[in-house]
Length: 260
Image (cartoon, rainbow, N blue to C red):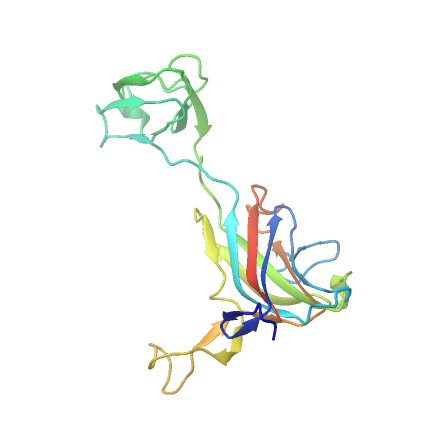
């Protein structure tokens, strides 16, 4: 074991591993046939390459013990909400702040684009009673730009992970892709950890007594993925509505672990 090895459960690793890939339109599977298997013509992205080409002399495999999915899109929450509960409130709105007009009936002026989100784009701070402001929608009067009714809504999206061995040109029809797991990022959730769906590692972890739901003597186990030299992990996005063409805002998939 190299002197540079770090103490990581459930074993020692020589070098830390950190890989990431951005997923947008790399779709995998078929929503119409309810399958996660990679279809002909689809091309998931490589997340981890454990020397599939067998070209390195210092790689004996490794372990992945953390995979995180982080959305690339971000939406500022509404700074003010206009409805019956907030009607008549004095507000002071700076450029870039967002107003959610949830009820046009309480607004005394015309709301050009109706219910929805409006970003203030004026150069000076706008102060006044929230129901008396002119939510122009076109940015011409009070300086508001209409952002739409569903501004900031992020749909649920599912990512599928696969493993291959000793091939750099996997062909779906030959069965080279093997499904590891799938993970859904819930709607309006910025990021998720995949440890709850990753495979269990065979080495128990240190523990003090039972954990709820486990029987007497049942060992707690780490979750992760052992990779032999020659393995790869691929990832793609499941094309269900509204992600039929992938998740176009994009998400970064991050894998951490270590090399043997």
